[in-house]
Image (cartoon, rainbow, N blue to C red; front, side):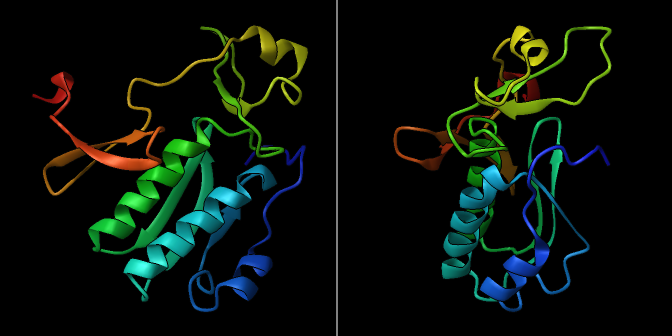
Length: 162
């Protein structure tokens, strides 16, 4: 775990707001800037799967990762959408942000930050996306986040996986 150098979402707040969903969560450690994304995910997923249980919220490679129990497609797509949106949202303030990846050979945490919250060093890393950004697969079908419609849309299997 890295040093929490900005406010983090508190598990107790999520448990209070969503009884039963986060009660057994082992780990909640993401920036407060992603709180709106987490809430939107839970609200959307719960509308399709009232038995949703979230086990973990964490940051990995600069974006949100959600570990949740659900086999309901619409809830899984809500999860994919939340994870995709985190790569475009500052984890500190919730404004538009960019994935900032350290240059080759440089050991540092990947972060998704806006221009205001990126350090001068991080600002030099540039604004990037990963080749898998916004894509997910479920039961053989691939989906990709579409910003214009704010939804996960079916796509053909990416060339890399054919």
